Image (cartoon, rainbow, N blue to C red; front, side, top):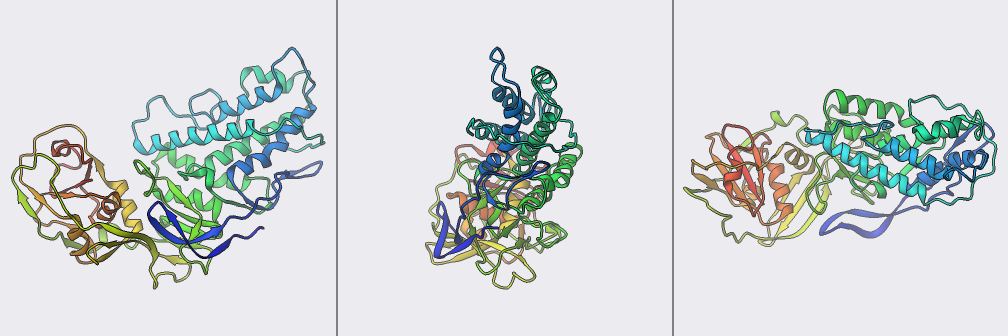
Length: 455
């Protein structure tokens, strides 16, 4: 398998965030698959998703080569790729991942929307492959997976133009595309992910167990971060160690996978981000574990004293120290037995530094409430400076034993993320800088303390 190498003395940057050592992306193997008269699979190597779609192409090309032409019918290629589009949709009769018209749960809506994005790109990439059909003979048995043909394709695949074995090949093509779509669901920037392929099995069939487990949880329980990590590591790093939590990210031979918190715009709830870098250049597989595996058992510390304000009508004027450098760094003493802890490190203009566990930041983001609705703030607000919350608190997760309505104005998004990682994630509300505190009254839980991160 083609190796990924670490670029010497090159630090990878994601916007203003410094993340480990950049890697050199390997060139992909030829998109031509390993084909015999009775079997097909991908060649061993490291692929982007687009290159994997190209590797699937021979299955479709052989079908198109053997179908009897019919000048009076629509192009067979168009018909079959329209079938793939229907299977990869989320609201058709043929959908392999159907969702109801209304999905009230935020986490399931995120997966539905992700499935739509990925599926549309896979179809577009398949449409962009050439019409130079592979003139080969291949007969294989493809287990029925329940993928449906659109009505107009039933005659195409079972009628006079077809041959008995062609439906088997097209069924395999359909299933491989479904496996790829569902394997990419965890990744916000799915088109950039580098996927290692051993070539030992048939395409991505090794992902079937992971896919089935994820789908069962998606439709019978709920989307959890552990389930998202599980399918991601099954695709990229199946040999990672196991822990009680499953971790929140990992490093593997071809990059780093972390919560997608540092994207432009609103951060996704559960999705992950692929980063072409390593935080530990001397190893390949490294599971990223939470500082506090059971966050509710973590030490709870008192929030630093703030300023009591009877009426806070608008975002308060602040002049906090600014972040001069932000980075992700592996704790030096944490990388034992391929399990490590990753910190978001902020260096402020006042010369002080803070490190916050990235896993707990992800939890704070997922467990936080968005401000919504209206109300009247009928209690005094206790206003805290964000940098004091980060720099002046003891190790542990911050709470307020006496209760209260605590407001933390934040000027920089990355500081807001750090604050979310320091607060005990029970009754924390996120409020946009342009909105007023009245939108937080009915958000969150109906008890104190309540923390409002006003960013």
